[in-house]
Length: 377
Image (cartoon, helix red, strand yellow):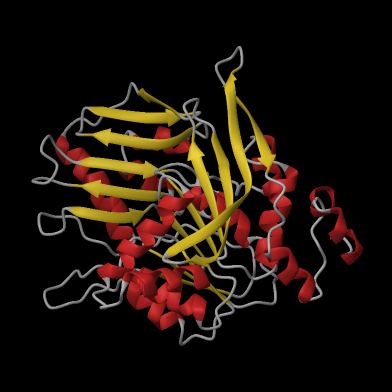
């Protein structure tokens, strides 16, 4: 048996059905597995991609492994379903592309699920952020700020979202919504929901948007959406604007400012005839904090911006940076050196935290000594 996080186990027979993927899945140094047709399997280690020595014997063997993965989680993979998002039964994220979409043979990508959930201390040791930056992020969660974690593919958005969710008080009811269930919250009262594509003629896809709408009927204290990438953004913003404070999601974007443009586009996808100014007002009143993460050239993943939304000036959403990461060249090993620089601007979320009578996380007093009188946690 192969052990995975939280006591989950990949059965021996399941692993055997995955053929040459098995040793790669069991190799803790590998974070991503990418089969390009049956003859080439690439892997990612320490942020760098390399060609492994393993391959499938035939395309049929690769297809057998794909069917083993998707059928275990109730998905289908055939010519009518050539694009599939799924997961291994340990939670690892899986994407499949089949012929005729995949011209040179099936494409299989597995983002491996860590056997041990990364903690804030782990990310501190990896240099993802500083203790002061972490204190502000923790304060944002405790203050029930609505947070978007943004970044590119593989930048660590889901990992950071999982870490942030750990600061949610244990007495709150949390609803999580994902395409493929990956988040592993430590709280007891968590309601996990996952989308479901149609598998039979006449069936309807159960989408992220459907689940966001349904979550509003479930008396959630917080809604956490694994990723907003379409018309569900409108429902998420409306939820944030109607009493569901403390909600969190991720968005693919290149910068905090790009997040705002992406949200505008996603809201328009919902087909609602709203003027652009009204959409921007919805965004500015719903979102409190954008945490932008990036995978740098050396393979490291770091928070590069903590940016707070402060309102509107005319037709423009205004924001202020609380922290920025400034690269300062490379060290002798080729790793990127840099500084997490506080801008000196005191985030408004601290006022919300103090107004609620909550303790200020340790580290805030170093940045903003005037808040030390509220006590430390």
